[in-house]
Every structure is written in structure tokens, then in C-alpha cells.
Length: 526
Image (cartoon, rainbow, N blue to C red; front, side, top):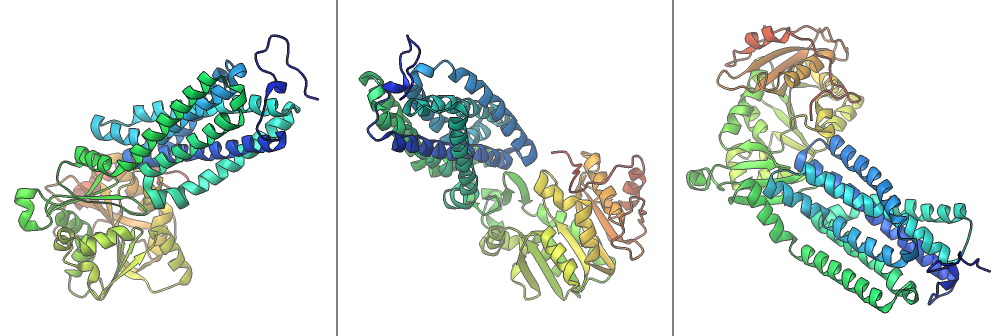
């Protein structure tokens, strides 16, 4: 027998009239917990992914989303205490709002970034809203499952949390392996909202339909219908929305916009140098950050590659990153180059560099040169595997990797990474590193210098006289490529060709000794 509720309660466990046996009804509630938990985790991961793409520094964005959501879940649980007598209707409205807020979260965040120029405040507000709604689910579901069949509170909570955690596991795996590659960030979030509203509506509109007044049922049906229509319309207009948002960010001359497996690539400006005076010079953006800018890209890559190539043997060259082909072009311009290996993690960037006429004009088709071999791999992992195999070493290594703005890119500026690179250098090999501006961001520049020396390399800072961008030319210190010594000397007597700023920068380097950046302690600002 089911115990009766205290006198005066508006609904009781015995009043739950179900269209199915109690056991099946309980199973359907747990199934809805499973689905809603999966959707909730997808919303969370989606916010982290979008914020990392738009703002950068994935560690900070994940910390903001997780901490705000967990706090908001506590707030939502407290607010749900006011709805125990209206658990079915309350759960229906909560799921409709959650589907709308979560499904549209990625689009709303992108819109704020594109048209308002700021996404951080919107990230906190959206995370808080979703967290409140997720937190309100569990108390309402606890009430509903107890109305189907009374059991001890511990057993009911165990069942609910088990379904919730398993659903979170499925949602966490579905996002990177299914939703993101098949549908992308915006459409994936909207379709998740569709699943969310259908799952919540089914439980309330069918399983607990006898417990809802007719007027409440129609209101809920209308709310669910409106949310469903909004989400489906959003999914149908994702492509025009993305085009308009890109134009707001990059201007009206967006020519190519593709989402590769690793990042979003956007090309603006004319397709050929002849069209640049009218259509604007070609610019390549990687996740919103300018990576290539017309003819000026040649100057920067020449500054990165030139001194390393001109100060010793350079028959075998390794380019880490450089999927745009510009570093490979500068390498191939030097006589005596026999083999160039380009290690690029994003095959989409390589395809674009080989096919787009604008990029082809800049890189002179370097990636298709018979001396060039392109490897699709993460530079860190590739170096580690190569170090274990003991393969032939390189005369020159060019680190043409993005600036250290988040955990993924900071790994490529770590002591461990430079230690692996040193092991891949020949006895007289050189490593060229792009280190940022010694004037605008001296902390980052000299941290790169300290990190190279901690990996057992001697360094020579240099820069073009007319620019504030700085570079570092590193060599193995006394053949001890694997030695990690923060006191490794700075030896700027090495020739750096036409780049004569080495002595000036080396003099400034002794002003402050900075600790190196490591995998476990990245020291670059986000």
C-alpha cells in the first residue's frame, strides 16, 4: 500500500494515475532523467567549446562555465522547493525553458561576440540560467518518481543519480564524437534542445496527463510547441546566421569559411594578388585570430626562417605547424635544401593551402614540392614518437605554431616540447621560435627564452629593426640536448644574417630572470 500524504496536500502519491503499470512508468521517468542529463552535459560542453573558440584560453572558459553552473544548480534546487505540489507542470516548464536556453546558447553566445564585441558577460549569464534549470530538475523528478511508487528516499535518489550519471556519460561522449563532427556547434546545440523538449514533454503530457488540469496541459503543449518551432527554425537558418555573424566580425569580404576538425578557418580579401587593391589583401583567420596577412606574411616567415637557415647546414628541415605553406616556402628558397617535413595537426588547413588561389600565390605551391613531405599529426606527439625511434636528426627545426593563448598551444611552448625538439636536432642544428613582442609583451617573450634555456638550449634573441615582433634562435648546449638547465647560457655570437637586433635584445634579457613554462605549470598569460 502507498502511504497517504498529510492532510491538506494538493496531490499525493496515491493520486498519480498512470496510463501504464507503475513499474513501466517509473522506468519512463528514469529514461527521461537519462536523456535530460545527456542534454545538460552537451550544453555545458558546447558552451566551453564555443567560448574557447571565440575568447581563447580553454582552461579559463571551462572554469567559468563549470563553477557558475554548479553554483546555479544549487540555486535551482532551492527554487524548486516551491513547486512540490505542482511537480509535473513544473518539470514540464523547466524542460521547455532548458531546451530553449541550452539549445540556443551557442547561437546567442556567437551573436553577442559578433555584434556586441563581448562574449564573457553573456557566457556567465547563459551558464547561470542553464545551471538554475538543471538544478531544478532533480527535486521535481524526486517528487514525481515517489508519486508513482513510494520508496525510501535513499533508494529513490540512488536510482535518479544512476540514470543522471549514465546520461551524463553518454552526453559527454556524444558531443565530441557525434554532434560536433556531424552537425557543428550551433546545429548540434539546437538539435540537443529538440531532444530535450521532446523528452520532457513526453513524460508530462502523456505519463502524468491525468494529474494536470486541461488548461495547464494546453499551456504546456503550447510552450513545448513554441520552443520546438524556435529550435527547428534556428537549425534551418544556421547557415545564413553564420554568414551574417562572420561578416560582422571579419567584414563583408569573407571568401571562404570552413570548419575543420581542429578549428574554424576564414579567408577574406581577394583570391589573387591582382585583386587585392580592389577586394582587399588576403587574410587568413584561425578561430578568429589573424594568422596570415597578405605580403606581410612573407616578412614574418622570412624573419622566423632566415637566420636559422643561414647560420649553418640546412639539408634536412622540420617545420612544426606551418600548414599554410609559408614557412616551407621560405625554407625552399635557400639552396641546398634536400628534404622538408611539415607536421601540421589540421588537414583542413593543408587542403586550403593547396587549393585556394590566394594562399597558393603566397606559398608558391610549397606543400606540393617533391622535397616536401606533409604529416598530419600533433607536433608534440610526433616529436615524442620520433625521439623513441631514434630516427635521423634535423639541421633546422622551425616552430611555426600559434601563439601560446590556451592549454593546447602552451604545450608547444613548454620545456618538455623544447626538450623533444632538442633531441631531434643534429649536433650543429638550430631551432627557430616565434616568441611574440619583446616590447608589447616582454613577459611572454622572455618566458619563451627562459623555457628554451631550461631545455638545455642556448638562445639568441633577435627581431627585425622596423618591427616589434621578436624571435629566438636556439642551439644545443654543448651537445647535451636532453639536459634541463635553467642556467644554460645565452650565446648571441651566432650569425643571424640580415637580422642584427640580437645584441640589443640579449642585453635586455638579463634584466629579469623568469621561470620556464612546463606542461604542469604553463606561465603564459591567457
